[in-house]
Length: 276
Image (tube, rainbow, N blue to C red; front, side, top):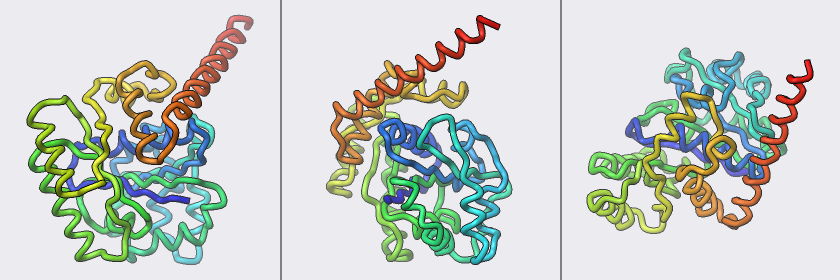
């Protein structure tokens, strides 16, 4: 089981959209995925269609070491996709909930989630406070979605230094994903700067600026089922291939098959409704 924390000092860089779309893509390809909403704004919980549920991650952090594993297992909810589950967040979640920044990792290990999942993806609020650091110690890798701007580049450099100096035994940054890409000279210069600063970590695939992502959040849709022909979907499939070393053709064909299967199911449901 691979545990990935989606993290960035800076807000507004598309962390939640990246986490949700990646989780959905992995589930559609056939992997068993658990998404963990480690952000009090609980946007990932909304994006994946569950909303706030109780118990949730706040209850896990506030439980005793003995009871927390059972609370975590009770907090796991089904989403609208087979193979994709979520532990939801709520506005009550806060840094004060985290008494021990290694707690989340110990709870995950105690649950032996590797029996049930291939991937755990943890979404985080901006910053590097106790909640974010808890996810750093829970994960094996950190994925960093980023804008291609000077402040964003500086923020990743600062974050990498903080991780190395203050949290040397936590997860490490392994992938940096350019987001909101418009193929301008200025953006390309910042992408090159990132590649020099973090050799081998910056993905060749950059996610384009595309209004489809706002539509997904507003309408509660799934990128690969409801907007499969969009530029965003095409680039995310390339990204999944790159991040997880999968055959691009295989990923495309499996997601296409799942989309067609979902369409058939929806058509059957509509047909049943006509007969009533």
